[in-house]
Length: 409
Image (spheres, rainbow, N blue to C red):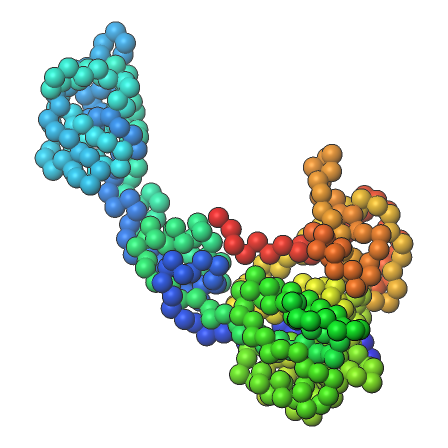
């Protein structure tokens, strides 16, 4: 009996356990998921500092400045980045200051260099500025012990930079989930191997390895199991130290589809073995000694769609990424679509921006599950619910983007 795709997804996510935390040096944290909050180890800026090159002055000395009544102040010192002026600034005095330098005691305003004229040890202030002008107060960016990044956050380039600015040299991240892969079939060989009669390239295992890396996991390729019980059993047993096992092919009902038989013999607690979806109907899921096992079909596009629908949220759950990060989005159809049957369909489509600025999705006219070139061309998967009625161009539909956005600036 087939189960709805939504039920299959719920069962898969519920079976995932977060991986343990590990500590990594900050430069190695790019693309990783935080396991603990990151707290600032200092206040930034540490003191009131100047935002511009100019002169630190007392507001009361320049409050009445105008083009007709400039003020002349004595320059008594300098405050540069990496240094400071440690004295007090009295009436009629100013301190030369540079961007990022601490504001001297007694001053409360910065007059930018362009609004002054220098002559020896004095300056003439030509334009007044309000109190606090061009001063960055202490803690403007963040204060010590403030939570800067929450657990579950992706360490993007910006987040790495923020942690560095907060003097954080190490962070706790989720260990990459180890995902074991077993391709099956006498007919498949790896890319570059000699291709015999009636054989095909095992693009699925290579593609899945790439997906797993992009999603934040670590693929463990256990090779190709031939269509005999011994070969498949050997590889299944080799996967038991992984966080998850994915089998590719052999999940249907043909004479040589042995995956389900071997998994059950090895003790699989089967949750389901068919999903009401297209492509990807013969999907197997269960637990083998507590390890989640996902059996995918052999068609390349079925593997890709199953990865977008099931594998991406599964790995996210193992990395403790918040459920609010789910990728489901909406757009307008660019073309008419016919009605759907009893299976939820995931239509490969391109994504564009219409004249009114709305997102438009255009499903391909051919949706064959063996057409990997079209899958590579697609930007998203348009979701058609079971028994969905015909839809018109301009109708709103849900879609899953095929980009992950994991590594960002």
